[in-house]
Image 1 (cartoon, helix red, strand yellow):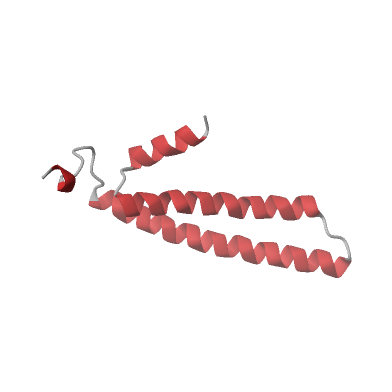
Image 2 (cartoon, one colour):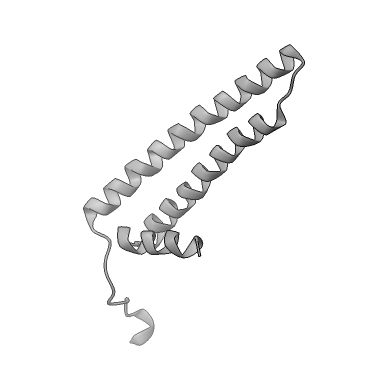
Length: 95
């Protein structure tokens, strides 16, 4: 039955799956670190009465990039994509 047939393209290996899971966990840890840094920075700036919005936006931008990467890795895990397929998706975003 064609509806149930899986695509015959490249398959995600167990090693790739493990690497992606570990990377997603690392990204979560990194995100938490950056959020803490952003909160501390905002608090310290507020204490000094000198909010530097450019610096706050730069920190927030770092977090957004981490989130984007985490979404891609999560997609790879959910859809069973290979590292090469994920790299191709990432390259196509830049175009």
